[in-house]
Length: 68
Image (cartoon, rainbow, N blue to C red; front, side, top):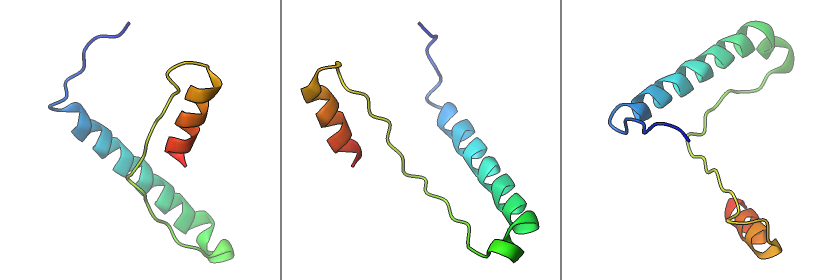
């Protein structure tokens, strides 16, 4: 079990860390790979994490369908 988080501040901390991680990878890509490989960098801030309610075939299929 884990302690209760702080929903007033944690989303901002997570968002900050996502942007810092993205900026780090973009910089790395530009410095080491872009000239040779080309390409562009982008970010998607939409994500889902779905787990089946149980290990039943029906719940697993439902979770998979939700992700797709």
